[in-house]
Amino acid sequence: MTTPSVSTIFLDIVSAEAEIFSGKAQRVFVTGIVGELEIAPGHAPLLTGLLPGPIRFKDASGKEDVVYVTGGILEVQPTVVTILADTVVRAKDFNEAEAIKAQQQAERMLTDDKSSIDYARARAELARAAGMLRAIREARKKGKYQ
Image 1 (cartoon, rainbow, N blue to C red):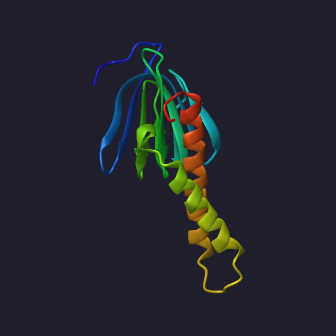
Image 2 (tube, helix red, strand yellow):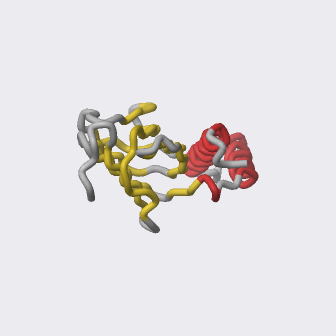
Image 3 (cartoon, rainbow, N blue to C red):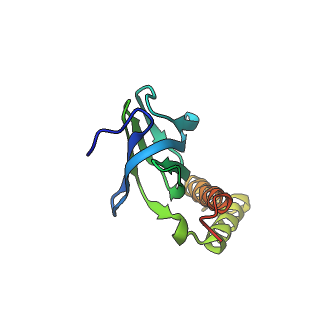
């Protein structure tokens, strides 16, 4: 790991399956349990959970990328940001049709009057699908998803 300059931070995005990104970044945008966060060089130390949704980051050259996480942990140190994600999906692997279908199915489960519904699971599925759709919209804005 190299020491980043004062205009960048070192960013690691990893999941159980793979290392997604490891390198210098200018900014990182995430949805933590405390709300929307923008991480810049010199940010105060922070440890928080991540909600399902997009993570946007600008690499050292200013190129922006988007990934989707199902949740995880964000650790911020003055020169290093580490994201330990449960699952990560790259923009090129987004499937909007599947995300819409999952969201509709979760919404149907929540409005169904059957007593056998696992509401916690249905709400978690709805949050995952909504987060994926947010990630797809972010990637589409950045030209990463067609």
